[in-house]
Length: 552
Image (cartoon, rainbow, N blue to C red):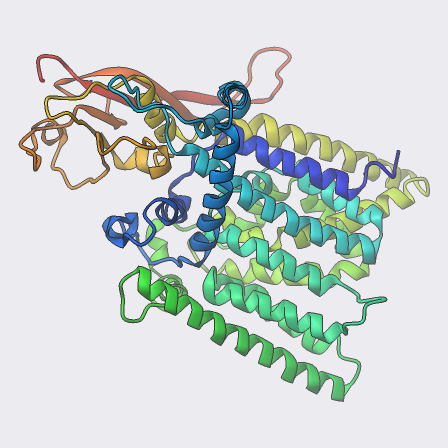
């Protein structure tokens, strides 16, 4: 039985959990907007750069196109193969049309465009496939990390690390989301597996793989997330000084690691500048330098305009929610398992240094979650081994496993339930297509999507697959008030919008045809047996509006 419940088994469950979150929450939010829209444009607009979303909505700071280009081209190939398979015969078409099983992946089945086209087929299956690919990459990187833990610290520690990761919510939920943090997470987790590798029985030397780990994190710093310099600094210091066997070895390590870091930074900075200058239509652009200048706490520090939190917020709020039972277990592992102390020190330095930046978000901590889980796994494995030696350890062991079960309950019952309800914009756009919008006198359908809906799931992937420019989507927010939405003059001589998706309570000249509920908070469960203790509150967040007959 023990041979069956290995870290490989739990990593497979983790991937299934990732796919489940893709199925029940296929939409993306504002933090993922740039990469989501960029992947869409890579697939559908290719070299027509004037039609790309970032030309009209560039965002606060420019981001790199390196990740979207790789992910978009991979998604396009896999999606086209799936479309060929799904539409090969009537049986496969019938199978993939089952929305209860496939969700938004049902759009892989083709529909015939004719005069009675209902416009229900969107491009959402591309977004789902994109997220599945990214989720697979995240899972593979984690699996590689756990495999190295099992090889060098024992299968028991690896299994505990996989179980703790599986019991947490945020990593599984975000593992498939096209955030710059997730692109970085895939690579930094793989780099950390190289760093943990003890190289027993391998022909390659320890210093070489250390240099590879440094180079990989350096690449992440200059391409995806400049904040990973806070991971590179302690990691580079540890592999350079604390693993040296003498002064001569330390000198060689300093030279080798510095050369690896500088070489990786120069090469990949050049790659980023070359690619991003082209797609942003700039003579010279390095996105991560722009991000660093924007967020630098000793410089412009403009990120604080988007909210600040106390210095210790990561310690008392973010990490407890992200790690759950692994948070106290990581401290126990640090105290009683010396082999995990370097990992704990690196992760703690990252959190401490990042705390000086006033603007804080949970996703900023993704790079060091595997390290904390590794430390927690060491502590949990030690409790497993010593559970019969004393009453105190027996009690702690029981509490640890109860904590794992409680973490699972919180992750699924509260966090997942609340997060799934956070995408009313995406649901509203899907509802609009299901309402069979009628063409106006111009032969087109005009719909306006407000800023809130665009930030909560209404992406270009949610638009009709092939509509021959029949449905005209607009998400600009440069109108004065709601009266302009029904009166503004368009290029073809028509006025106003036929449909609206927004969060307004009432709009003259339009009738509400669909209410979309969303997350509004949590409340105590006052009904017996009081489980779950916290309930997710939902209320109408977005409405789909149709122009009334008298207004037409």
